Amino acid sequence: MSKPLNRRKFLSDTSLSAAGIMLGSNLLGSASGKEPGISPYDAMKDVMKYRKIDGHAHPDTDLDRQIKFADSLGIEWLQISRPASKEDFKPEEFRENNDRVHAAMKKYPNRFIGFFTVNPRYTKESLEEIKRCVDLGMAGYKGYTQVKVNDPLYYPIIEKLIDLKMVVFLHTETQLGVGGYRMKYDVGKPPNTSTPEDFVDAAKRYPEAMFHFAHIGGGFDWEYQCKTLKICPNIYVDTGGSNNEENMIDFAIRHLGEDRIFFGTDNCYHHGVGKVLASNATEAQKRKIFFDNYNNMLRKGGHNVA
Amino acid sequence: MLLDINAYVGHWPFKQLQYNNCSKLLERMNRFGVDVSVISNLNGVFYKNTQSANEELYDEIRSNKRFKDRFIPFAVINPIYAGWREDIEICVSKMGMKGLRLYPQYHDYGITDPSLIELIKLARDRGLPVAFDIRMVDSRQKSWLDIPKFEPREVKYDIITLEWQLQNVVPIIKEVPDAKYIIVNLATSINLNDEDMALIKKADILFDTSGRTIRGDNTLGELLKRFGNDKFAFGTHSPILDYLAGRLRIESMSDSEADETTKELLRSGNAKRMLG
Image (tube, rainbow over all chains, first blue to last red; front, side, top):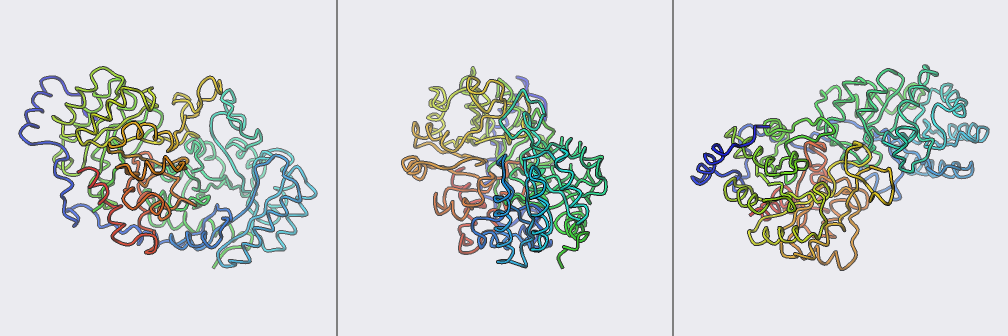
């Protein structure tokens, strides 16, 4: 920013103003044609240039509408799951949620990639449910806030997912007063919400596992997240969430590298696509983020798309 | 023509911003085909004497002849700080500013404060639009130094940003229903009762397309039906939010949601009408 006006300068400026040199005086009369130097940027052409797998979505109450959204932004595939935030998420409830995901997969078999959910507090039922869901053709796991990812209760789940070559994908938060971080500001979130530090702890214990840290655009402190997760090459992030702050993608590429970032929306489609296209990522990096990175992860378990 | 009604230069004290001066914003506009941006100085959110921020903006725009043709400056005014009436006069008459940006939460006054009512009436009489932000940043990633989410007596230690909803702006529109209003970054609930919705539909009011609430059940196509084609305009909330999401909400609409004439209203037509 320039220095403030001093009095003499101000008087000088006002005389210029009086002479007609006012700011923004004739801008609204601009012709419809672009001025030299302004790109004739075609936003939708840019959107449709990239194949996309949405690595973080949930089945909408209206699946037809969801597919319409996806179509409007060139999203070919959406990974969907139905985890729950309630602390005592019972086996009959996670089975029902998984059945709803499976129903969505059946309705749109070439659009939805189904992920199952469980509650690690119910070890036996969770492992049985994983087997059932794998048999139904589901491709990975999404957990929520019942148990922190580095809690020993998670160990059997993580070890099963390692066997299946499936990703360990969890809801995360990084804000004041959540999950053990600066709890004097307690905002009433579930105490077992996983933080970046929890992910690093689990990822170091299981270097052979693939961890997916949910939505750096989930409204949380993405700078804090990326700086913490940087040291673990087996932790991936997705770009989803309702927060689309500028520089999020560039910052993530700089700290995590271009291979550890998945495109995701968390059902926030316009800002999901917009934040990637508005970044300074190269064409090749955008292709990786929008499609290749996620498909390469799915390929390890044999669930990649054509 | 693309006219962005919601952009800024200046600093946010808790996070480094990119593209936050006229030169960098102009590069952004050129890359993505935006012709003109309405801008104000973020520093004015934090200066007690906001006129210093307006002077900075005036100086910066005048520092390069290209800026004068691409930016429409709005003045940040605090109606409970000394000299605000004179500040408006200087900003409008001498500096050529075309509207006012107001921050009741950051400047610590209520939405029906008598000084605000006086300011809005003054703006109305001069034909100046007045702009309110529903929120500046997402409360979940805010700094411990930012404004609180709840009243202090409600939650003692919580310091998450107090986020307005659209209904929080309604009282001032009731007080001065014939002023020109711009409300940006619809990031929270936009639900209104029937009486308030009738007031909004009748008012000369413009929402920008930058806010995250414009999704799901509140697609832009649905909101055009609910509020009217004349009530929305392209906005980015740059450099805080990404430069394209507000644009994609317009451009990705199907023909049945918005024809080309309506999209042109959103790209610049409605903003031109508001800005005169």
